[in-house]
Length: 93
Image (cartoon, helix red, strand yellow):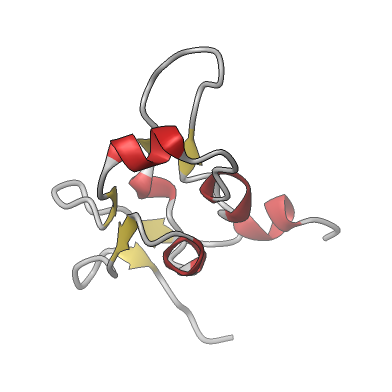
């Protein structure tokens, strides 16, 4: 395997259909953010934004791999781990 995308395909996870564990606290802060580091830092592309439209940053929480990078890069992102039985399935081996 040569790139991150190849490794991400090996992860198994069960998204929580009823609770969004990654949220943007205030979209107006995102609109003022020039760099939007969340768009490039997240390895699984949870955060998306259309540069050409005046839309909010979208949070595709069901593809989150729980690395926690987003909570380190931006105080406007509310991250918590999914409920028991949901999220990344860790298997020894």
